[in-house]
Amino acid sequence: MALYAIGDLHLGLGVDKPMDVFGPGWADHVRRLQDGFSQLTGEDLTVLCGDTSWGIDFRESLPDFQFIDALPGKKLILKGNHDYWWNTAAKMKRFFAENGITTIDILHNNCHFYGDYALCGTRGWFFEEDQKPHNEKVLAREVGRLEASLKLAAGRPILAFLHYPPLYEGYRCPEILRVLEQYGAERCFYGHLHGVTHRRAIQGLFGGVDYSLVSADWLRFVPKKICD
Image 1 (tube, rainbow, N blue to C red):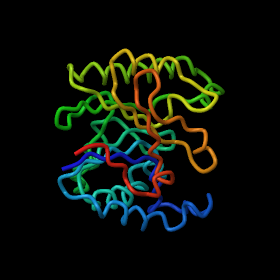
Image 2 (cartoon, rainbow, N blue to C red):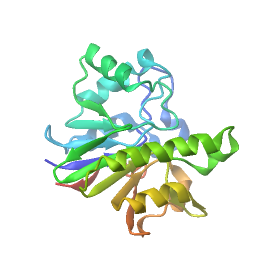
Image 3 (cartoon, helix red, strand yellow):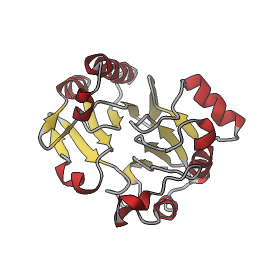
Image 4 (cartoon, rainbow, N blue to C red):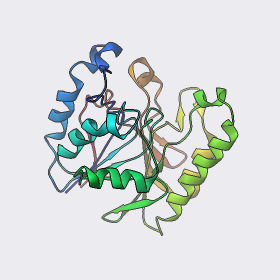
């Protein structure tokens, strides 16, 4: 049994959204994801760090979740900025149940446990969002969701998962960083950065937290093993 993370699957099996238009790094990425997950077993758990499906609603995203469900192991999903299909937890759980999707659960306003670890997370915040209306309100909401998740760790060592990077070259989100450090998160995994922006990722120890980029194209579509 092992724990993995990967973000930004950007599946579009129910819509016309081929990813190879974003460059050769995304060529044949669905098959490459299948190959990447083939090393996992049914006992493993993978956290999917947002931007999972291009579908704008459950109907369009169903083929993507059927694909994910068929991959080895259990999966936890959190919200990304392109997950327009995202809905309330109750509606998402009902959608999965009604369609026989049994290997996917949600990391949102909650906390899951893996061995001794608490798995906490939320979408997060990104400097691009500062240009949109009500940014302070949405940032406060994301900080609150992250803190609520971290509080549920109940003293266990914490692994945090975000979609947006809380820091990268030339940018910091002090509100998110403060909460991660305050609650003693050991490691934080994030996605969202692609292509040339990979070079701006900050990885390694910062403020006592060890950060890792897990965007699918950065990982070459092979989930990153975190621990056994």
